[in-house]
Image 1: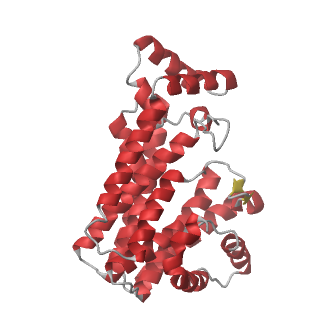
Image 2: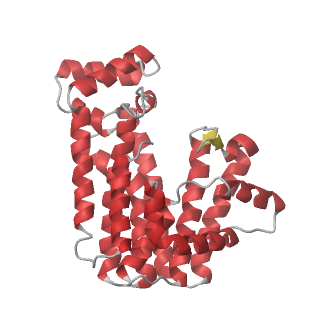
Image 3: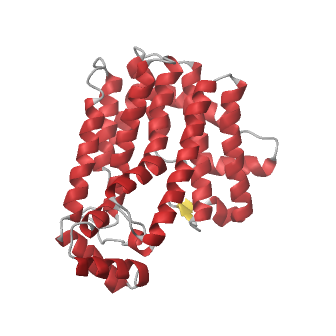
Length: 325
């Protein structure tokens, strides 16, 4: 059995119900909107985020979920979909999960409006049901994601990122949404309890490990073949590169910065930078930090009673680290 199916097993019934409710939450009176949402729903990804919401809720509430849990899972999926549609416009990307992106099929203007529609649908789902605590969690996540992206763009221009700034960027840009999933799961069944903050922290730690894993893909591995160097081409400062920049000679540092700034389209030069990062322990250091976040996340589950939901969350943490794409 595939790992994702194994993780889904204890919440298989709830995931089916979630999918029905999610489809309903996307409906509109505009035929164009409905055909686009139909296209999106039929090309769904692994649905990791709703899985986090449901698993956390069931782990801390003796296997029980509430209507609020389903709304929390729908809200997070609506917001996540909105950010993906907008990201494809921002990145000028024509492919999403192996299919044409919304902007590739319907152009940027419609894609931006679709993203806005999902965003408002998510917020209204909370407001219409007086889930103001859930609304706050998701609104903070959207704000932080935007700030993280902008901070990354600002720092990329200067290439002067410290490790601490990098963690702040990935905490906001990536970890905050996974943190929101886990705190939504807790808040949906035990509002105002300590578990809400505890689970937020748990999700944040997983998100940090998740992003470092993404950074490592850029350098290639046995499983995924050639390094891509896309981050370097886009002048994104990732952890392996930051570590090496902060631990090499002034001469090497100047060469790396010049390569990333002025020669990032030169394939040979990019591959030389990748090799330099590998030779100077950049990847080993990033892997070490990734496992640090992973272990910290797992330690936060120790206080909870053993259950199939807790086991599935542990599997989820392992999956984040071991995934091949």
